Length: 352
Ligand code: HEM
Image (cartoon, rainbow, N blue to C red; front, side, top):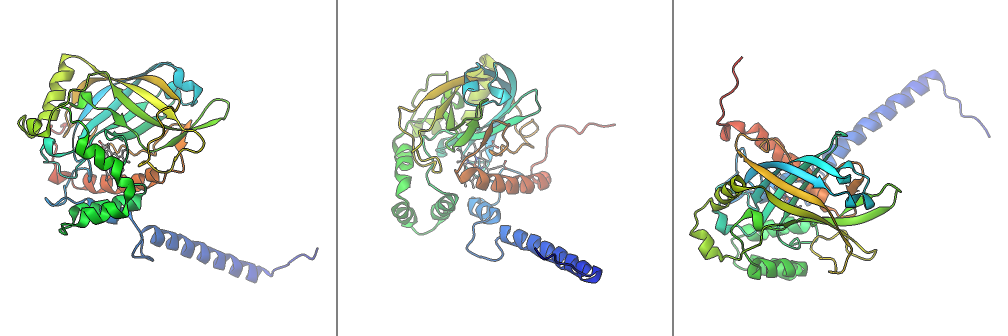
């Protein structure tokens, strides 16, 4: 085969061209990520804009699930999860947990009884230096199939057009199961009585290298008691954080973590679709909430419960949400941490 020989001058020129191409390519990749080439492209900025509530940007606060209360506790793994994932968090033992009960609203001053979706952010840390972060909600399914659908839902719910939601629901038939839960599902009077569902699917890898696509949920030990939103409204605008603070003061609150394993034909890329009831489930451990922590000055303030922060043994799946969520949560985190003066801490700064 003939060899190609280049003079040193041509080779330097070739390298410069190559460097220029790489730089241009990198810049183009940034521009693409920023959505500059295609105005229709969904970006974290657009999503954050669409989340802005009518009350205005929640400066210093999370751009969604802005109202909440922090907690600390432990996760006791019972060892059963090692059949699905080699992550240390499933090895029998106790691991520190940090989390946040919250409301699915971008308004940090919303009255508790007006917000349908309740959530929990959770971080479990293990001695191998790894972390599992997750943010879960109480509906059994997500309202839409794709991040683009979520954006359209935000636009429709903020629209002044009285038919906007009707038009949205007609274009997104997948919304119906969530809509049914939102209108007919029970409300409870406590964060402790809620079931928190991860909804997105992830892939667990076991110690033999076999992969299992899963979703997870936290099932409350407390018996849920149904209360109408009208009765909840009478309990005051912040009854949820007052109730959970008193309840945890009276004793730790527990949830069982259940992992559901998909069959091969199950819709793993669409959190609006429930998997059939008969799927294999594994109880992998218990979350115990031991202490309610201050929201403004506590350990949750500067944490981003990014669902792509995962230990080895858990990875993202073909579900498009976690990557989209990660980019929007990062944008929200960057904004709120730069706005600390609008949400000042109350604790005295330590003096040297
Ligand atoms: C594309 C879809 C989604 C978008 C754009 C979105 C947006 C956001 C944003 C901006 C935050 C605040 C992040 C921060 O500043 O730390 C947040 C928090 C949260 N999200 Fe999402 N989210 C999406 C999907 C979901 C899904 C599918 C779930 C649950 C299955 C979920 C549950 C939560 C929870 C529980 C929090 C509060 C976490 C905390 O306490 O810090 N989100 N979301």
